[in-house]
Image (cartoon, rainbow, N blue to C red; front, side, top):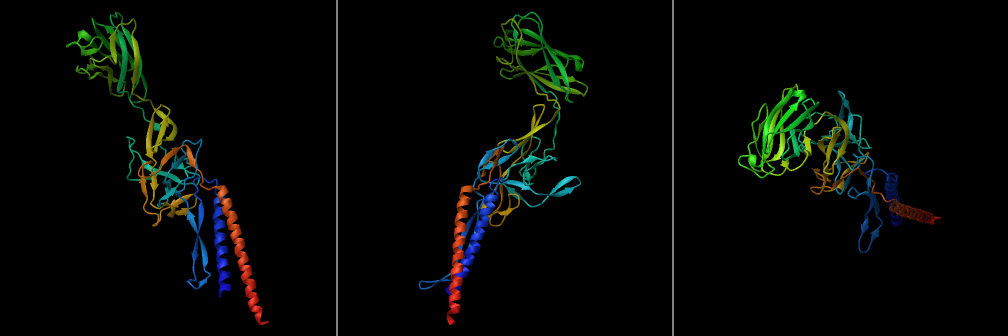
Length: 430
């Protein structure tokens, strides 16, 4: 009968509003949780019987309406490796299960999250506040990511090996008509990263001709000499004040063939105790007014002097670039890319299974996971040094709370009225 149906319908309303209140409670409790996605309520009606002439009370069910695609507020932090996604997508993360032989072991399942409050743990992994480890594509020696495999990112390369000097670049002006030798002091690095002093001495050897002597005390003194011919001294002549060619090399020095526009290179070797070390001295270009020139002036002027050697470097910091590259910075001024952070997208992200710690897992309804570079193939861009706050709006949740409370109270009135009417029906025989 309708009285009993109205009571059961009202009871289903009580259950539905209780669930809605639970969603509101969960949202408010997690309003400050990084990467949290609120749960709205979707009410669905079920019918007992409904025709043109008869309608019997049915019921209502409250279903969760997930908002995984709704962006939370992106907020800057003082943590340089905190990450947020501006747009669609999730970070791929791993869940640790323990240790084996001193190494962390991980759950084989793939997990995803928007909580990017990552910090370095004692083992060098990037871990968020919920304990999930950030995963990415590891990079090769050239810094290019290997997109065939994704795994936890670990900062383990704490030393940057020294790089021996292989190229020296010099830009200077030798005074035309100069009569006294001039010199330049510089330091190069050997294969062990040790600093080795070197001297470049220029001596006038005639009109428009200078003799270059390269010496290094750590390599036994002079490494050889070579003549530089400028302007009319070259064969064929070139523009005045520019390098036209090399002549009379001695020792380990050798000059490049004179071709207008080509680099004016002097190659030599130096043995600092670890075997011959090949070095190239770049003096500019043939027949071009750059690098080493010979123009009027009273002094030898050095405009630029640089070498590409690098000493031993120790770990200084880690940073994440906007393209997702994770780079280790060293105290010798160098950096090394060790991995790239990708972004994973789904066709139906609201259908992902929710897990503890603001994590998600793929389901059949969510579709396949597509992993790509940030800001490509529909994936959002990375906001470095930022976190994504919860997408909960407290004011909106309070409005939902008031509506749920009033609806719940109204349903209790239906139950009370139906109960009283049933009692009146039972008492009719008295």
